[in-house]
Length: 298
Image 1 (cartoon, rainbow, N blue to C red):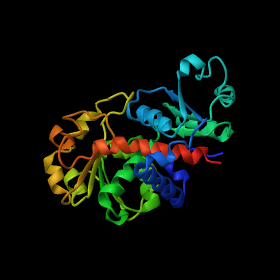
Image 2: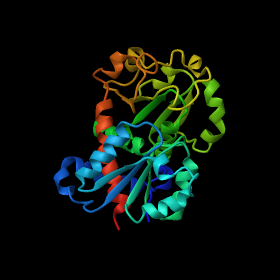
Image 3: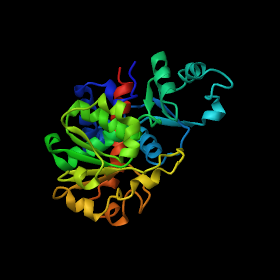
Image 4: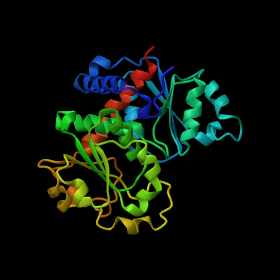
């Protein structure tokens, strides 16, 4: 049984195959319109969602399958009424795959180990692999060659960045992680596990973004996270025209959204000619479709 929990669980060829399939679906969607016929995808959202919800819902239906959104509290998925594993056993009698978006990464890992149903990580507090694969598709479409990818991540050390670091370790593209020292110090030990010549930390957004082909950011305070005065450390970390002009010619700007305009990015950058955020959002659907085919294919 196949699951999709974290990018670092996969070999390069497997990721290549998923990306390649997403490109094929995008080019000729009608060819794949019955790939998931008679299959049902269950969705559990314990956290708010727009892009993940739309991309899985519409993506599965365009593959010929059906979708069932399940309210965690209504079906007793909180271990209060019965164990999550028991709920999963029952679900397996009715659905073929389950996507979970929650704040408990260990739960997803443990449920996948039960091998009752294919489990897809739709976002946890630890990682967001579906997002980063969609971003990788967008990077390849805009930069043509992986060898040309030079990403500057400017912002917090969060779940999206962690999945990006996992991807960097597999493909060895250049990644500058630009994070205030006051925040980065809490992740130094983890970061050292991935360190290589193309993965570096910077405290200065200008130095870290120099000649980058992609500037990527996210909100400074993640969904559900307490602010704890974090924002004060991000002074001068707003992605603005100065940072864009400091990067390579024709640099692309990426943001997984939702964005806090005027905080991590200015509106003129978010809406500007370098921004590919809407392409990012749409590419999530093709990646979700490729992931669904990957986990459901016998």
